[in-house]
Every structure is written in C-alpha cells, then in structure tokens.
Amino acid sequence: MKYSNAILFIATIFYCCSSYSQTKAIEKSKEIQAAIKPGTVAVSATGYTMQAKIDGKEWSATSMVPPEAAGRIVGYYKDQYIGLPYSKSSLKKGKIIILGEDEAADLFIKNGCLWKGMKGQMEIIKADANTAEGKFFFTTICSSTNKSFAVTEGFFRISFSKN
Image (cartoon, rainbow, N blue to C red; front, side, top):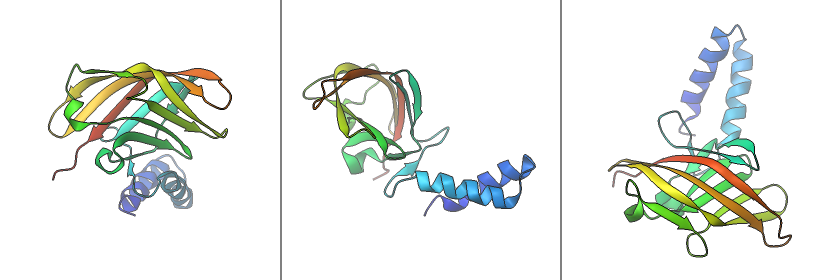
C-alpha cells in the first residue's frame, strides 16, 4: 500500500517518543492501515479530509475516494461513509449547492439503512486549480423506516488529479 511506510514511520515516531515500544507502534500502524479502504487516499491535516457531526456525534473520515474516480465526494470511516455531489465545474468559491432530489447527499452507517440527505446544503469556501474545500449539512431520511436525523458541521477538502 502506497501510504503504509509513511504511516508506519509516523506511528513509530509517535509511540517511541511517547515511551511506547516499537511493537505498539507497529500494531497502531496496522490498525490505521486497516481503516484505509482500497482505492482510497488516507486523510491528513493538509490533504484530503472530511468530518461532520452525525446525530450530534463527532465523525471523521479516515480515507476518501479521489472525486474523479467516484464521481462524488466520499469519505469513509470503517464501514461508514458520507457521499456528497461532485462536479468539478461547480466547485467555485462561494457556490452554494442545495441538496435535494437531483443533488442528494448520502450516508451509510451500520444499521442496514442507506440514509438520503434530501434537505440541506453544501457551500464551497475555497477552490483553486488543485483543491476545493467546503462545508455542508443535511437532514437524513431512511426510506425503509422514515426515521431521520441531522448531519451538521460538515467540512471536506479534496484534491484534483494533475492530468
């Protein structure tokens, strides 16, 4: 895996400097790598990132799919994910995308329901030739149960391929 050496290095430094053994660092590195899904990119402080509150609870992606590959902005945490609409041409600073039938957000959490975000918005707060950042919120609805809750304080950062 592309990031495994960097993750092992960072985990080793963190744990060794914190008086943990190298064995603990390797174990932590394996745990981090297991959270990164194939075909995704690890999140970082300056690269890809996505976070939100789901029903009031903090949620942070551990990996994201490059948007050109997925056709959406998708962040994963274990088997959970948040998906947002993606169109590179609409990612301009100040652009507000109203979430609804044509521009739906989605959420999957381990409860057997794919939640659709049919009310909310996504605002692009930064965009240049290499990256875009945005904030988002939406109310989710489970079609099989009609239960709903809010996804709030969402933030994402993505990079574009250099083709």
